[in-house]
Amino acid sequence: MSGHSKFANIKHKKEKNDAKKGKIFTIIGREIVVAVKEGGPDPANNSKLRDVIAKAKANNMPNDTIDRGIKKAAGDADASNYEYVTYEGYGPNGIAIIVDALTDNKNRTAANVRSAFTKGNGNIGTPGCVSFMFDKKGQIIISKEECGMDSDDLMMMALDAGAEDFSEEEDSYEVITDPDEFSSVREALEKENIPMASAEVTMIPQNWVELTDETAVKNLQRTLDLLEDDDDVQYVYHNWAE
Image (cartoon, rainbow, N blue to C red; front, side, top):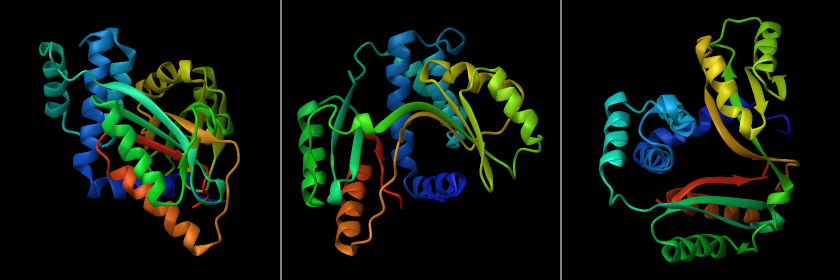
């Protein structure tokens, strides 16, 4: 990413998330509900739930909170009917933004997302207007500091497990997978006790855009902050080279 350290970005994101731990736990809690509803409460038979549990642990969610969430989702037939919805649009200077939300009220979410774009001088576009500029991939980030394995051995392990690509950064390794292979690659690394700073299916921009205009930066940051503060918004992807 244009000379940026991916691990530094992950740590930066984590620090921001630490300040908003309630938000990240809410996000994961909703994902647990959806995963349990779709595939049942047993992680052994539900790969989606296994992935969400791994994400919960990476974000230091306590085990009893995870277990409670699974039990509640399994036992509550009237649990909120969350559904995934995606919005696409443009920030200042044509910065591409994708917003993934999980909501029980699509009208509320749509209004809030539109407002966030408008307040930052951006605009919502039609479905597909920017997603073609991103690749949907599984992405696993491993901190060098926490992983003592030789990089060649780690690369061979990841590729043997089905990874598409492996790259070495200054302070981290990045493993890229096809979305359908993500669970099996993540589980293969987990079995070998490889510590993962981040493991998720994400949208990776094909190109990054620099912003030099101060007003544009402020406007874009405003949109991103408003989206991040919205309880319905799960993830925000963009191609701004911060």
